[in-house]
Amino acid sequence: MAQIDAARLVKLLNMTASPHDAEALAAARHSNEMLRAAGMSWGDVVALRSEPTTTSQGRQEPDGKDAGAAAHPRGDDLFGNDAAMPPPAGPSAKAAMQARIRAVPLFARVALFPLWGAAESYAAICLNERGIMWVGAIATTAAITVAMGALWCVAALSFARQISAFLG
Image 1 (tube, rainbow, N blue to C red):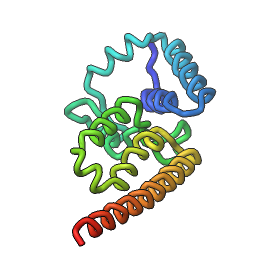
Image 2 (image 1 turned 180 degrees about the horizontal axis):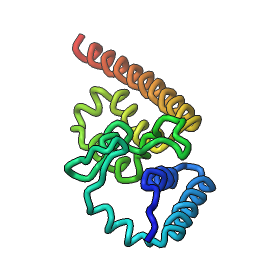
Image 3 (image 1 turned 30 degrees about the vertical axis):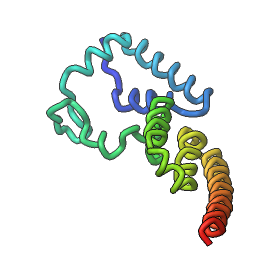
Image 4 (image 1 turned 180 degrees about the vertical axis):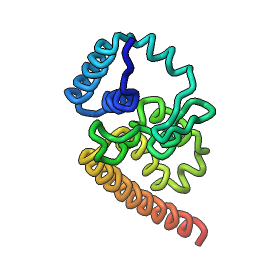
């Protein structure tokens, strides 16, 4: 069994999370080619992961993880010249955030409606977006938040006028 460049394989596997399907597919296929050339299977890679590894500087971490893994959780791009891309939030993170936002008591939702609405809009629209789509999603969320704030102010003023007319 030949040696495999683990750092390059990790970079390729990180590229499979790309929002660009062609890039992700090319990375997956190249990863499979690397394994085939080394005479390995994915089962061999998983079995190797349980063994302690050494870092690129020759230091061995107690849990087998590279010391640079904390600084670059997703690794750099294939050629090592771009900053690490943060992991996509994914549907489970989106659902968890929406559940936390919806757990806010009703009184707090009404009292702080524009803020609650902004958080709900962010979770629904922006959480999974990257790049230029993220900018559009943020602009949409901001527009929704401003509209909700204006409606909340109109409703609060109307409510205050009714209360003052009732009392006075």
